Amino acid sequence: MSGRMMKRLLVVALACVAIAVLGVLSFSESGRSSGGVRLTRQVDGSMVLADRGGNAPVLDVYEDFDCPICRDMHAKVDATIRKLAMEGKVKVIFHPVTIFQEEPMRSNSIRAAAAARCVPEESWLTFRDELYAMQPAPHGEASGFAVEDLVKAARQAGASVDECVRSQSYAQAHLAETAKVRLQGTPTVLLNGQLLGNEAFDPAALERVITGGGGVTV
Image (cartoon, rainbow, N blue to C red):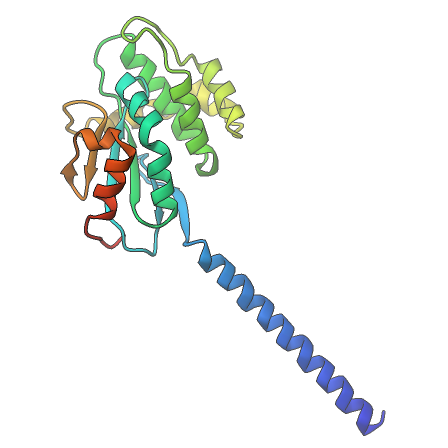
């Protein structure tokens, strides 16, 4: 092989290496541009939606899936909360709890929350939407969240977790974690540990209070 040919092969090889390196860098940059926002399940069953490498105020949302006021708040501000989380402006921690002690609300709530623990992270927010859409009514009278309905809702959210939902295997764990939380009612919304009032139901007011607050490391 001539020296000229060797030089040409070397140039081509170096060019391929350069392209490969640029491809890796481009992939890394595109990954970084997403902000690293993801939904993560915690040991206690809470779900964290956040840029885990960012600096943002923390919004704790305590909700009971059988609570009509929680459903009302969800309808009004959930889109705003998710938007701010995806923009890295807030770290949201969803805490499903069972606040009701009377039937049928208590059992409704437990079935729904236990099923939610079965659903994987990538389908959980959609399943949460399904739960509020199928909330039993009238409140205080209707039994609902039947396990077969919950199985169907999970499938609609993209999760095949039939046996887990049917067995209600997370019911006791859910109740054990709920017992550790002292709440007057649901929804309870805290921003950096401070209780929010009516602004938790107003998208514009909630966004103002979140974006105007101080940051905390998450």
